[in-house]
Image (cartoon, rainbow, N blue to C red):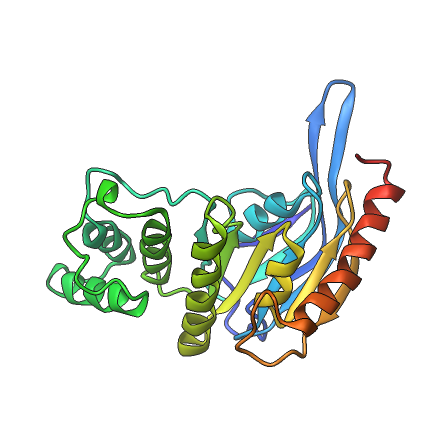
Length: 259
């Protein structure tokens, strides 16, 4: 029977540990295997991108780590409860930016008298100082994702799970938020597991890139990214490694008969 631990044991030495994790879903006439025998560690303070073609099970895997679903087989252990950030900002439109963050603080048990100050600190961290009272409709797409990032950080988790959070943004805004995420990761020491189908984004951000094969998702290959930060999408080393990873990804897609 699968074992999922929402809260880690006292002596966890990894931000996340996945041990032989598989996931299948019922379909007419049987079950469909989506993830097959995934074993992966995310070290404390490590930035890992999870890369693969659409439909390979990346988001499913992230949901399992977040505790939103349980694996069919295998075990998942995390260092505390992870914070999750989606492609859509999922902010409450009837609340201000600050109050959206305060809601996360309230759910975490932060005293009411301390919430405003902490929300202001988090807005400053994501470079939205002075935006506490702005409504969601007053914010640009990039600003909304910054608020969503601040709200995720308000959970005080040691592991941040990000499911294609910048995919809907234009290229310039996405590049700016890459810079911001890299800075926040360095300043906070939080561990990040970041899902994307964009190879250059994966290389731009991560210390390690993990490639999933097409369905069922299996770990096909990993790359350690030794390119110093700060990096740019257009940097030659980023482009070179991206080309190498893209060729392997294309091979995986061809091998599984997709597209």
